[in-house]
Length: 376
Image (cartoon, rainbow, N blue to C red; front, top):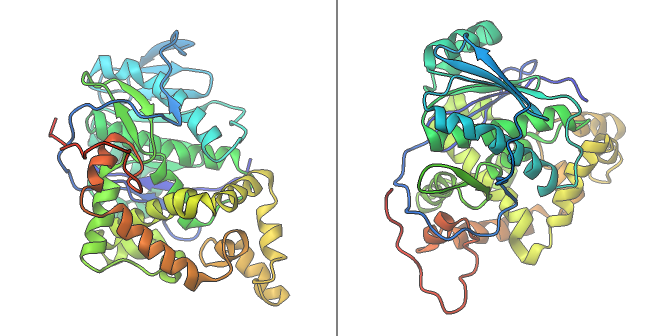
């Protein structure tokens, strides 16, 4: 297990990630609140939430969450939950176990962490803010200014209850950061780490609010922000996206931060699905090599890395185009053209209907008319 600190703050709706100063990289999340669709047919999911006997191994009271709470132990998690809705709270252990399965399979197979991971969900902002100040110290004010949120540091996620859908979204996002910090031997590039966390957010729910599936395309908030960036002609070029850190975006403003995370979400989808899956193996190879501790060595030996001293710096930097050129496509100009077209394709008129269903907007099912989404 690598020893690193990463923090993610999340806010209502779309999750974005941001890092603190170099010694304390941070991922941040916030979002608009678009209308929700009515329930739709369940698409094939990366990992369904199992309808099996409960994964709970033990339950005891937890009285430090700002409200009535429990410490729930499962095979992979120690969940401290002060969630307001006890019915919703009881569904979270199975949900997080399903997320863990998805993290291990989506880009895998990857090894799951050997020790249970700690995840806190406080009842409200007050106790979460106290924990944040205690954990981040003098760096806390910048991130507390974002509004509702949570963070992950050294494999521990600290969140608070902001309603069913948004709490699930943040838990899935932070869960990837936990998994990554605990399972991968070397860190991924920031754009990929944050893009994967956003990619992992998609969650399918029943009408009664029970989470039932984990589906990367089911992320209307990220898609909506990507559409806004495309129609507003404010998308970042790949060269800029790869060099940018969430901290820089946070300093420039919330719109820039939202665009950054929407584009990293779209970039992971591009690498996974575009060009008939042409780049998927390269994407998976990056994650696999980081998990096995071979990522930095390969980058340092890359023909695109330059002279030895520059190669060492580039290989260990978490920004830049080196990883994408080494694993995916040497010609960034070619990728840029394809990525731009991909953004236009997934944000075209009517594509939101497919996003609501958790389906790829790249192609429509034969013989079907687009559904009209309805608010919940």
